[in-house]
Image 1 (spheres, rainbow, N blue to C red):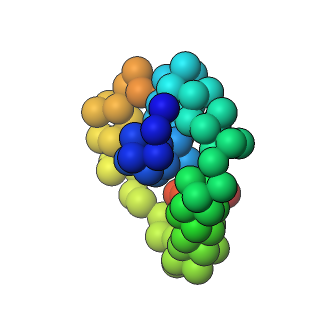
Image 2 (cartoon, rainbow, N blue to C red):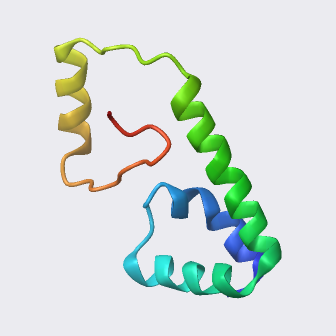
Length: 84
């Protein structure tokens, strides 16, 4: 995997949206490439900062149910905006 491809997949990598195989390939690249690792760490830092600083608003139950119906079968999780 090259740096251009890894750069495009850093956000999905952080958000755990990639297949196990692709995640592993990017992880291997990040271990070997200091430039990509710096970019990854920067994006991860932004996600963490946003997660800490943004005010969390509670969605009403009807909205939660609508979202769940539309995303059934999706196992995507976001480190940036995970529930506390």
